Length: 250
Image 1 (cartoon, rainbow, N blue to C red):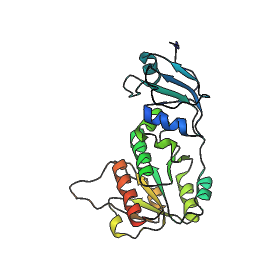
Image 2: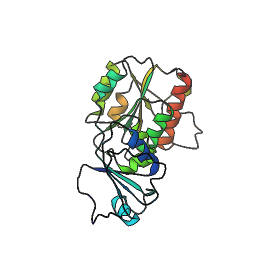
Image 3: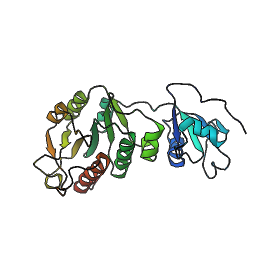
Image 4: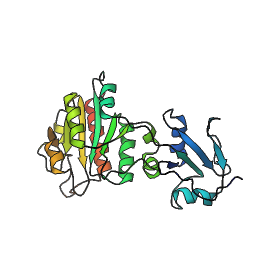
């Protein structure tokens, strides 16, 4: 059994773990897998291309890569980060789409929440998730595991300036709609435009003031007033569901 004495050193590498995220990473032509580490029996029924360098290791080695608490299921892949799509490239790719929906996350810092939003994005046909470079987590094994493979399927775009990204989307025909618990109009009572960029803030602080002011308008989720707010990933799922309900044809 081939072993390594220490964690491979490259500050740009990321370590994906868990069967489903790695299975989708192996199918993703844009993903460059540098090395796949596995424990005996964990590769059963998993299709690994011949070009992917693979090594059988023991569990303590995998734990040293991603931590003992990580549910790696005997599989860890050392990968290069995905090539970032720019907002202008995203706009070009959606030019012919009659309907399109994008999630913009302001001050959402928990990789588990962002991973869950990526997963909901796939479930409800969102076209991208956009976050600011400052404060938002980078691509990581934790984020990928929380996304259950969705990181390989939906563009995850980090931008240096959120306001400029929103302006570019508005120029391309998107309506930037903020989710705010204090908004007067409920999302279910609003006729959502064909092309929406939904802007969401953190559960505690919400959107920054300038981000809110840059929205075309804000809506709220219809909720029992006893509950002040939902976890941002739950709110994102309900928002995407409502958009898809109003725009069933893709």
